[in-house]
Length: 78
Image (cartoon, rainbow, N blue to C red):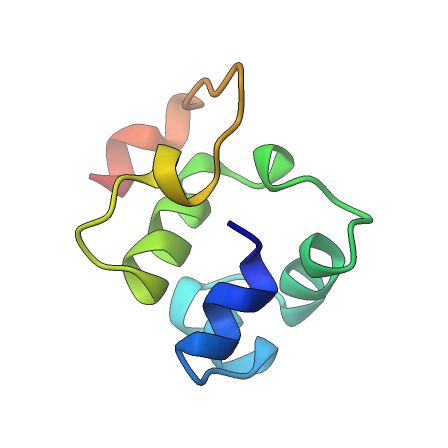
């Protein structure tokens, strides 16, 4: 799903989501406008985005990425 749609449904601004996730709001903005792919964002941050926007839904359903490979920071995301 598109990040902007999920964020809008959750009634969060880019800044609010960024603060919840612990990233800069420019990261959220760049993903939403297509200048950065969600699979280039740290896996732990993606997990936190998913938890903030759709708790309980698997990350792969929110952000389907063909070759999704959690990075080494995935341990801290669980």
